[in-house]
Length: 214
Image (cartoon, rainbow, N blue to C red; front, side, top):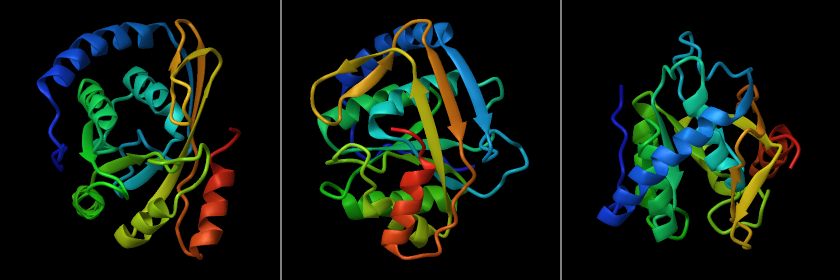
C-alpha cells in the first residue's frame, strides 16, 4: 500500500493547531447524523482500482468528518490534494489527524510536482480526493485539471455529493469552508465512478451533473 505524502512542509504551528483542532473536530463529528450511500464501493474490500474522488471545495471539511464517522474502515489509502499556500497547509495538517495523507500543489503552484505525486499515489493503488472547483474558483465550476489527471492516470472519477443541513460559513470569499453545526444532518453519496472517454468539455459537463445539487 502506498505511503501518504506531504510534499510542501507543514509548519510546527500548523501541526500544533491541527492537533487541538482535530480533537475538537472529532468531538463535532461524533454529533453529526450522517446518512450514507456508497454506490462507488469506496469502502468495499472488493474494489482494488484507485479512483479520483471529487468534492466541492466548500464541502471538503464536512467530507473529512464524515469519513471519520464511517462504520467501515477505508480499505484503500486516501490522500487529499491541497494547495501549496498557507491555507492549504492548514487543511493538510487537519487531514493527517483523520487518517489521510496530503499532496500539496495546484495549477498555479507546484503544478507539475503535484501531478507527478498524484500519479505515483494512484499508481501505487491509493485514492486521491480533489476539489474540482479549486484552487481559484469560481464555486461549482469544473476545472479541466481533474479531467486531465484522470485521463493521464487512467482512472475513474467518483463524484462525492455532500449535503449539510446546518453549517457555519468560514469567510466571505468563494472558497469559504462549510463547518457542520453540532447535531446537523449530513447526507453523503458516492456516485458510481465515471470513466473518462470523451472530450474535456463533454466530461466536465458530465461530472458537473453527477456531482448533484449545489
